[in-house]
Amino acid sequence: MNNENSVAETGMFGEFGGSYLPEDLKKVLAVLAEEFEKYRDDPDFNEEFRYYLKEYVGRENPLTFAKNLTDKVGGAKIYLKREDLNHTGAHKINNVIGQILLAKRMGVKRVIAETGAGQHGVATATACAMFGMECIIYMGKVDIKRQALNVFRMELLGAEVVSVDKGQGRLKDAVDAALNDLVENFENTFYLLGSAVGPHPFPTMVKHFQSVISEESKRQIIDKEGKLPTAVVACVGGGSNAIGAFAHYIEETDVRLIGVEPAEAATMSEGVPAVIHGFRCLTLLDEHGEPQPTNSIAAGLDYPGVGPEHSHLKTIGRAEYVAVTGEESLEAFQELSRVEGIIPALESSHAIAHAINLAKTLAKDDVIIVNLSGRGDKDVDQVFQMLKE
Image (tube, rainbow, N blue to C red):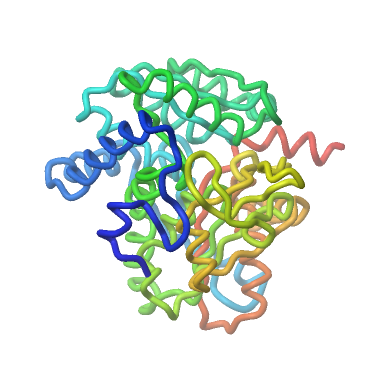
């Protein structure tokens, strides 16, 4: 779908991606891109990466047949790729381990990150604690309030959590603040970006480290079913868990790739090509041509843009993107908990909600893989308050 050498050089996925930044910052990220290309296929680097994925993250995680949910819904078999079982409770740690090992090789001791739902912040704080690095996490004031437990986790792990009060006080504003920090401190700082967004080389790096998800699930589903899945379903905000879940299936054109976004931030159906945070992607814009405020119940999906490769996959028709309402995801959150004894993150609940509807339209010998990107511990209090109200 894309020439790998071309992407490595330009960071462009068709018309999307690139690096729209001040020259000083472009030079910094050019060095980062060079270091990433140097180490991505380095045997010693990959041996260390795999070591931590196994011994620290707890991979490989299961591909669980959701038999009870399948029986209740009818139609296709539903499998869950259990990223919720990773150390720190989500897929975010895969990418964090890869980038922190890169930072270590570059000799950088100060790490900054942005976070919405807090899972990337927790993962970054965890890795910084392990490797003895200074850690600063930028988080919108609204997200700090609704994800208070994750804020405490980050602080417990030794990170400084900086409240971002500008704008809506959400994920977009946290990214703004992190990029401003990088501009001011690029000489001694590593920006550990958590999603498959941002200027080159971040989307390529994040996909590379998250592709372990589909590397495993592809092998696991063939072992279990003797064939590839009918569809792979994953929630999409910026798009890191989804691009990881899709990566090894992109060339398998018989496999449907379905990204599920919140109806309250429906970037793929309502967005237009624009530049946000130094890269070009489908973006929700207001009447003034500025990024539009978003308001999803899932903090990790509250972003007015999306990864450039997702924008490209949609544009060329390789992947489908659908929207699910907050109410539907809240019902799926409760349904999976009741039926399978698995409490999903609100982000992942969007994918569960669509998978339930999709399964009903398919035959019993069809197979759906849902990437269960995170567990719902962080959301239980928020859901409790919402249901009480």
